[in-house]
Image (cartoon, rainbow, N blue to C red; front, side, top):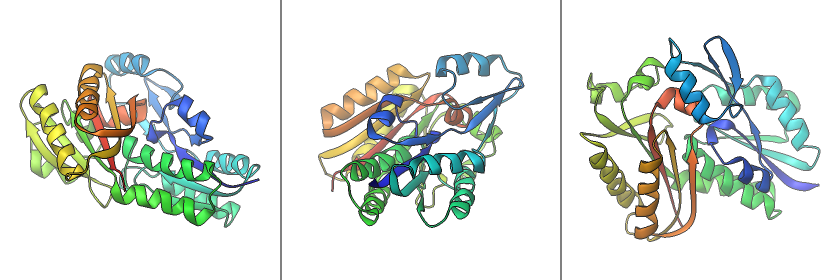
Length: 280
């Protein structure tokens, strides 16, 4: 029996091959589009994009049921003494509440962490915990690895518009900053409390991309080494440009380049995200 197993949810958007290699258990959220319900990851992002464009309304997303977490925890406890379960920000989803109820029913072996983030910002925390768990670290060290990553990680999101966030009701304090200018290129970050906060509004993709790189520099704060994640939905050229610029400017200890899954894409729409985790 290993000391700790890692569980997360599909909003981390980690590549399946990496999840398998690191022994991470991912509990999928689900989405309903044109009357049919899918689990996150069940269809490709390209197929989801085609369905979303043809659908008369925005897809509906759902957090995993309590039973899905109970199943995941029971499986994880077959090979580990404890479980560290890391999830999308509680300000953006009720997923951690399902996980919390499952943990309550199972007992004290489940240790929940609110990532206060999503996508790459969540995924790099999960990876930090998975590396510690894979090394055989005890519970306290695995929890500290995740919490240390949470303290240092920052993520910026660049969107073609705020339409999806506005329709999904997750725009919050951002709306006061951007007002009705939903046709601009906009950049958002995830604040310390796990909710979206405005960064800037720009006209034109290249200006938004450069603003993203400038933001990365402020978060690196003169440091040269770090781990990064670049995610996108229907913006592969932008993602490649951002990846190339980051690899030119910094000593990159790890780089993830991923396409966001349907649940994240439902709420954010077309765009990109860059996650920064400076080295300690």
